[in-house]
Length: 359
Image (cartoon, rainbow, N blue to C red; front, side, top):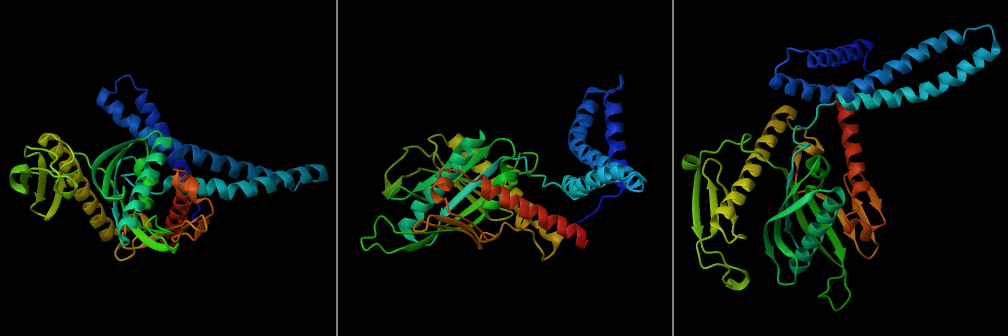
């Protein structure tokens, strides 16, 4: 594991003190105070972890002197305390190393959640609906808000495709590992012979972009077509040209939005989806350029990979990336995802720490 030097710890604490002093200056301008406050909020947790490492190391240094004391009782007491601190030090050093890892700039952003039925026909669409409800319940438990952007319902009540926007603190940080192919094994409601079928749905979690992240020249970059929206089976939803199709000419990306009765609202939602997809494409390009062929679980977002299986007959959920199996499928489908999410975050942290050591 990466060991942070005493010199590096001193630099961290000095930077924290420097920011604190600058913020307390009577001459600091309001806009400068905002910038300093942001920097301070970022470094304070790192400085706290650094202080803990420094404290343990300093106490161990004192105890080592006590271990040479001629008094056996003092040596025994010092030995017990030293053993306890030696167990605590690697944990404190790991906590500090984690704080020093580069953060994903998108972690605090809202996320666009896209779920599409894959192989399995009606059963895959029902499973896509199950997944969307699972994430809705998880979001509700976290105090997040889910806004339905677009949905293409199936005849049996699931979704051929459903897109939602999830907003709240730390949304992308906790949902980004959900991207991939989710597989379900169960007896479909349409199966009279009781045979188990395997179906799949694809989940994509993308950090939402703000207007400042993706510059779009509507006049030059976009072709916007409007037409009348229609429901399942050609049923008319609206008698006006409210549906919107936006084509991003430089990339060829196409976004269609027709869920709202207002053309203006459909255009706004379509632009939101387009910006998010363009932002993610740029993130992936930069991640690929930095890492070359070696992509991390976070950076690749490879949605061709099967990541998780939901097995109804055995009541289990298996995440294949970390070989974790939990025998509580009903609870997980009710939105109790924290055990899976925490395990995936821990695995990602371990991989990133290991890459620091290799570097």
